[in-house]
Length: 375
Image (cartoon, rainbow, N blue to C red):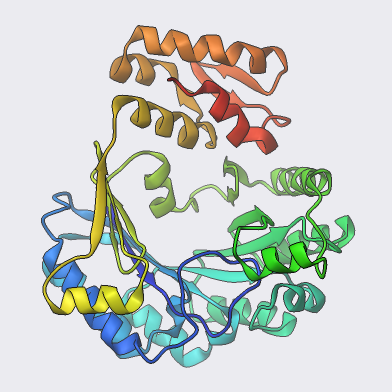
């Protein structure tokens, strides 16, 4: 089974930390929706498998009008084989959620909402330059549940300067009290050329403290483990049965088609593609019947290193038999040799012929994966 990702690159305002491709000018939204539908038509040969997941990301997909959302979904369902039980996720911001939209999303076939909460505290939201309030953060979840959305996930951010450990724990406990079955939690990073980056370099915002972030990561993992959540990927936690099927397909190397400006695609084997990150050029290219993308063919070394990076971040870890089957015993042994240092340091362990992270290794996942890379 395969997935389709649709990138909707519009936001009401720019969050200080965000480096995703988006625009706060929405005049081009109708033209861009038309271009997305045109790309879906032109790209239908890229994916041969039935579609099991559709994911509206951004940007802020909840800014789509009812008719725009319907047009995109109808186009996909007309030209692709979509499973009748497909997981269809829509990212939404709290300030966009109301009863009428929720009713329409349900009618349109949305099965899962991903809500950008980030924090339940007003001071944190203002610090991030979020568009919603703390009151809206809680209220939108209650509205969604009343409308019948029980497959919900929310985003939370930790490790921001000024976020105390106690307030961070209250954020987690608020999510638990609201009955959220899935949480995606991210340590604040200062990405180059973001507003936050400029503020930090000017000294108007504090630098992030990695020790502070590690402490809050430990609070997060312990609290959610005690609450019965699976820590199934470094940043993702789910009650049994509520893992994100779409995001899991990325980590499992399944094929997916990315539609929209800056969207990425992967054929499940060696071909990776990415669309131009420019809204006007994306639109004009599609109006001329061309999809503006670049592509690369992954080498065996790139493919194995991608597998090491993504699978180490998951609960299941790196499967040694999979390594040997796909890249040979010599490469498997090279990975095991590189892993010995982290085995000795108890950052990783062997479980049923899988390399998995220990509790202390989880905050170091990317660095450990880099140490395992083959050359």
